Length: 88
Image (tube, rainbow, N blue to C red; front, top):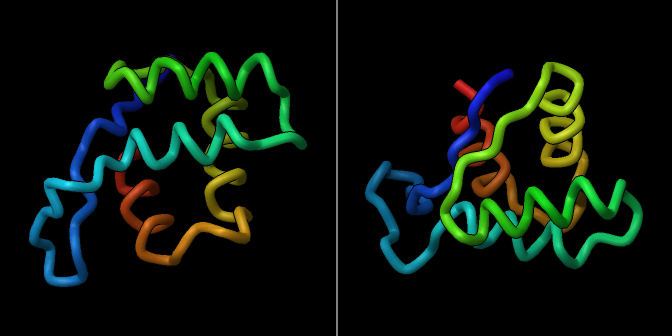
């Protein structure tokens, strides 16, 4: 199992942190408004992430979450990039 922590400020293009935008809160709100995914899994993740908790995922769930972020049409490239950094 891998532990993922999205409780980080969004970094601007120059790398400076935007303390007013939390990656986890943004991701959780997007996930909670989803209607095409496994709603129980995504809602449980969203609740933990929103409350600044890390989540544990197995390799298949890690790939599911990566694919979700990569393929989401309403996320900006900057947001996707910063979220994907959390997987390293």
